[in-house]
Length: 352
Image 1 (cartoon, rainbow, N blue to C red):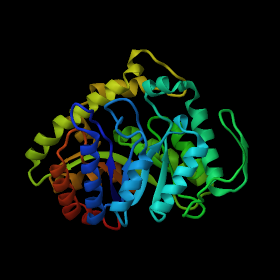
Image 2: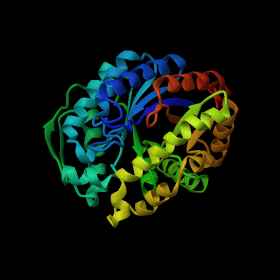
Image 3: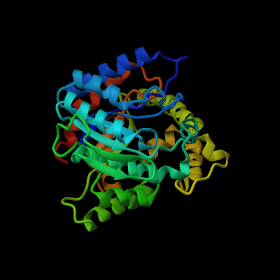
């Protein structure tokens, strides 16, 4: 099992400047690489405290590429709905070159109604835009002289430059949250999958459907799963909870505020059940997230027990993507948490 670090800015100018946030994030990325974390990942979101400091993950990862040597660099994830495939393919290949072939590309549909509204996109086109976008980016990265007529974008006899450093292209991940169809699509297409931890009763069947779709499509192996968690590790369990729980609660409030249109009656056939997902998150808190395993907070022994339990309950997953500086977590505390986790938790799962 591998452990990486995920950056999901949940701050605004009133709390921290972008310069300060990214200075700390790059320091933590460099530290994570030294400690043996296997990936550095960042999101794409806009306009709101929830993620809005990261409108372009490729920019951050290009900087992180200069501060790291071994860790994979992961977009978690780019949004085809808001990006032209010609531009996205060129930027992906450019970062693949800058990083020496260390890039993995996660794609997502986007899920915040306010972003669709501000970009002038309809959530009802989400699935179609996503699938067309990923198909066209794939063609542009793996072929030359590409022509493709889509519903939203048309490409005529185009060779995207630069060409990818990895052959035939960087690994693709698909972000999937709640829809069985999304997990099955990722498996059928042979893409790795990015998910967010829910209770095992929900996660296990979704991951099983992904693995089964992968198998039925005839791909080698069993697929590859990355799941995101909050993580704060401290030698003292009580101190870990005292520090992390209020920040997780504030993070959840920020998420719900950003996604509140789903609670105000916005409905889209492309997002079945999202009103229930956001309502459940609104009712949730740090204690529940810790109980279900979405947040890893506590001593090294506490966290190791949680990791082992989730591996069993979820039916196995290959990568844990850890938010270490969530909300307003001080950089030095995040650094100490990473060091303790790397020293006392990660070795227990080496080779697992």
